[in-house]
Image: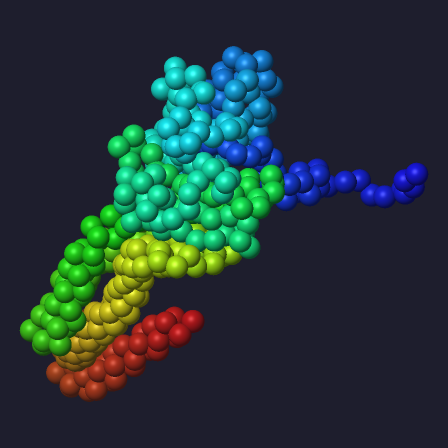
Length: 431
C-alpha cells in the first residue's frame, strides 16, 4: 500500500508537464494495415475551425471529442482509426484501416472516411500520403515488382527498424494527388509499426515544411546581391573627397531599413526551415536504415536532394545577417566622419565668433576712450561755465585757469569711474 507523506502543494502544471512525454504515444496497430496521412497548413483562425470540424466527426460517430487545450487525439471509429495532431503551423490527420488488398494502393484508407466531412477540412494541403504495411508472404519481393506500385518510378528504400521491415517510396505525388509508402513486414511488432509509420510521415511532412523557405531564398538572392552592390558603391564614394557624407548616410540608412525589413520578415521562415531539416535528420536516424542493394536509402536521397536547398536557405539567411553587420559598421564609420565634419564646422564657427568678439572688445575699448574724453570735455565745460559765473559775482578767479587745471583731475576721476564699473561687471560674471 502506498504511503502518503505530508508534501508541499503541487505546482499547477506538474502533472501536465509530467505527462507530456506520453502525449504523442504511437498508436497500436493491427497488421496488416492501410493508412492515409494528411498535413494541412493553417492560419490561426483556421486552427479553431479545424478543432470544431474534428468535433463534428466525433459527434457523428458518438465519440467524445478532444478538449479545447488538447493538441493530439486518437480514437477508433466504426471502420477506421484516427490520429489527430496539431502543430505550430500545421495539423495532421492519419486514418488507419486494417487488412490489405493484393495491390497495396487500390483501396486507400481514406475511402472509409465520410467524404462530406473531408471536403470541408480547413487549411491548405501540404502533404497527403497513402501507406500500406503488408506481410512479406503476400508480395514477391524484387525491385521490378516494387517499382510497379510506384508507377515504375525510381524507388528509394531500405531495411528499417533493425531489419524488421523494409520501407519503399518514390517521393513523388501520383495522379491521385498522394505520395506513397510501402512497408513490407518481416517481423514488426504492433507498436513498432505505429512508430515506423509515424517517422516516415514526419520525414515527408518536415521535408516539405523545410522547403517552404526555398522559394523565398531564391527570390531574395537577387536582393541581397543588389544590397552588396549598393553597399560597395557607398563605401567607394566614401573614399572620394568631393562627396557629401550626409547624402551617403541617407542612402546607407535607406539600405539598412530595406535589409532589416527582409530579415525581420523572413527570419522565422528560415529558422523554421533549419529546425524542420534537423527533425528530418533525426527521424531518418531513428529508422536505423540498412542498405538494399541497387537503390538509395532514404537518408542518401535526402542528403542529395534536400540538403542543397536547405544550404541555399541558410546561405541566404547568413548573407543577409552579414550584410546587416557590414552596413552597421559602415554606418558607424560614416557617422563618425559626419560628426567630425560637424565638429570642424563648429570649431571654425567658434573661431570666427572669437575673432568677432575680440573685434567688438577693441571697438568697445575705443568707444570707452572716446567716451572718457567726451565726458571730460563736458565736465570741464561745466566747470568753466561755473567759473565764469563766479567771476561775475565778484570772485577773483580766472575761468580759463580753473578750466585748464580741472582737465587732468576730471580725466582721472572719469577713468577711475570706468575702471570701477569694469571690476563690478567682472565680479558679477565670476559669481
